Amino acid sequence: MRRITYRKAAAVAMAAALSAALLVGCGSTAASTDSAAASTVAGESTAEDAEKTADEGDADEVAAKNCADLIDAIYVQERSADTDAQCEAAKAAWDALTDTQKELVEGENADPDYFGRDTGDAGKDDPRNADDIGENELLVVSFGTSFNGSRAADIKGIEDALQAAYPDWSVRRAFTAQIIINHVQARDGEKIDNMDQALDRAVANGVKNLVVQPTHLMHGAEYDEMCEAVEQYRDKFDSVAIAEPLLGEVGEDATVINADKEAVAAAITAEAARRGVAVVRCKGKSRRVILPSRLQNKLLRYIKQRRIACGSVFVTRTGTPLDRSNIWREMKALCRAAGVSDKKVFPHNFRHLFARTFYRLDKDLAKLADLLGHSSINTTRIYIRSTGAEHRRFLERMHLVL
Image (cartoon, rainbow, N blue to C red; front, side, top):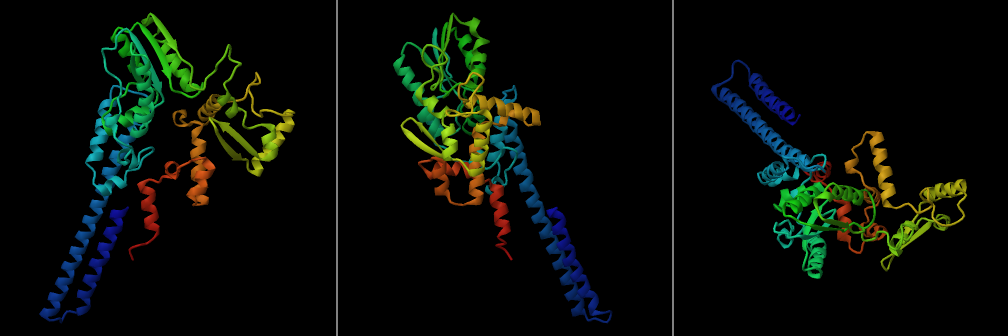
């Protein structure tokens, strides 16, 4: 489309030059002829410049789209035999782009921040994927993060502490999010095992006793999938033990819930619906969640229909408060029914949707940080970051060049 526009402009320039020559008339002097010829040459030069500019613009978009397609190809939850090569190809394509082209990278999941954002020094992390494990392995399983600084400080920090506490065991790492594994590998060249890779490594190294320690906060689909993966390998080891999530069930049976989990699950109560404010207290912190009037009215009607006098509004068939895993399963089921890929939908998406919607209506970042409960505005910026394409569209609307 842009090339057509430029060619139209070039055609208009050439037509103007030819018209000027015709207006001179048949009885023109040599000087007039020279002038017309010069005008024609100028028109041809303008056309060539315009077409060259159009070609360069098209080349930028083609290069950016190629990189975006390669990023989208590795933004998947399944690992294949081609994953390593795809990660290398995506990084090579990004490195070959000019700064202008990098700003144009935009795909279904691709944007300039995929490779361009500085998240810290990956060299400070340890993927813990070495062999020579020995007979006893403590496998630390995390969802994962592509933020290098956080990964080195938090996940590696847990792993280091466990290694220090259990020196007779070899601590190894596995991530459950292949999307994150691919991101870190493509951007930083750091290879982190997924569950199957970590378990295959344990078997190949002759591990006899395996302890799996997740860093998941609570029970849910991710924890269940981890357990299913371990069960596939149980007969490969002499003993296998899987620890509870960090906020998992404690006590003698499943009816005993630890205080932090109970505080979160029971936040939306009949009393909170009547007040229009829910208060969540967890880990020494308190957060007020304001319920909009329309939501409050819907909750009150629901409470009346279900004859709920007090306590939690949303409960399971057994009467226990709903938690993240229940909502996760419902969201996945709705996605499948609607024909939407359930691999990209998580409860946390609602938080991002709220943040972006709020910011479009009210550009007050400090107020949004307060509503989200962020102690640092830098954390809030992650929720509202814009792509290079969005910045470009905004600049075009400003009409900076007349």
